Length: 310
Length: 277
Image 1 (cartoon, rainbow over the protein chains, first blue to last red):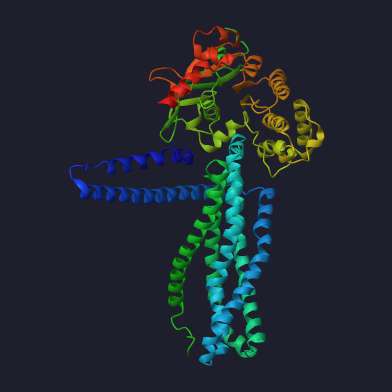
Image 2: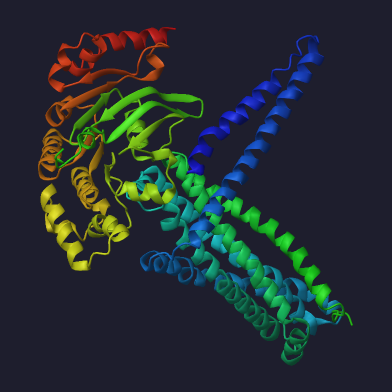
């Protein structure tokens, strides 16, 4: 109920604010200075409009997320809606996540080997590769793959449903579109992304090990022993914890873009691309904030940590 | 006093009452000051040019769009004042046939028609199958469409499936949004016949939005004509005709008679004047 009214009146408020600001009379100032000032005011007006649009978008998606959470806790979605989504989002994403993870592990080995060799610390290569994978690259990679595969396809599918009035049809038959369409997808992303992260981590570790030991010729025993010493449970936990937030963001942004799709084929295309772009930027932002947060917790709980050069 | 079967005001209360309705989209006002009362069992045709707000009015009647000012009352209750649960309950009493049928692409025809029953009732699989077969027979479709997806059917067949789906829960009021648009003349007449026979078989109130005069005259017992707001003056009403279909040709308003007869003369002059300016 709120959503509809909000969409109707948000733009009218913004336009009126912006219009009143740019009507400040500067015609008294003459010539080039007056025109330059007018140009500055126009640019500030544009900037203000963009910022207000972002604020309105942020508000819109927060309201959307709130309504979805309310529906999440009322009733479990039907089995026919959850299982196909689980299959699409989880099972079909596995191959691409596995392959990407393997390559990232190997690339890391390639890039860091030369520097470590110069310091005669190549047995510590395992620590660098595995720690980076488990804490950063695994979660971010799995999330990016999911945003590309699932985020934009959710936006396109829901956008097409919006454009062909299927979402209105759902409402007219007494089914809430958010409960029927968004909740199953949200649950699927949230519950499956930890598994995908672990798969990315595993294949990255395996790829890095394979390349380091069999191609670069690093001693296997020391590679594994050092890695085991410095990569701890908390690092794995941190990675999986971050991935939960990424999954939630991808589902919410993808579905929101689809629901608020503009009419026509162009609108659907724009919804799909903006779903991926906004998801990706949000993932990066969340990664930074969560990284700071988790580091703070880590150093509070374990003030004396083993350092890589000790 | 001996009690009779129905108190008199019960049968006189209109099913749908629209009071001073205004609907805006951003800055653009689409409906202004609409007042309509629809009684039970009536079949109302809403006609008018493309873009005069007929679909907006229809969607406002079921609560898919919200009034900017004014109110829509369904069976005495204000739709905008209802909670989401109450609105869901009331929507079971409506059937809505969308312009492009709005069938769910990912489901088969059988699943599409079964959808409202699975949402709201606890009927067994067999009973749902029986109801689906009955509705398909009513709309004149063969049983072999049940396993197909909507993309495999023609436009006319999709519309008929949409009608079967709208009828699945035996609603009290059915809303048709341009049911014959885009269909060939014979298929249009099939749909008109279906609207009439539906009314014969079930005691429904119908609202048909159309710009096909044949549909309006064949199916309706009351016609309302609307005019686009941007070509009206400040104090003119948006509804320019409200009455029985057989008297519409005698209406003194030239806009009405030109629409009914499909005469473009004055409209073309208006458009040339606009472009010339």
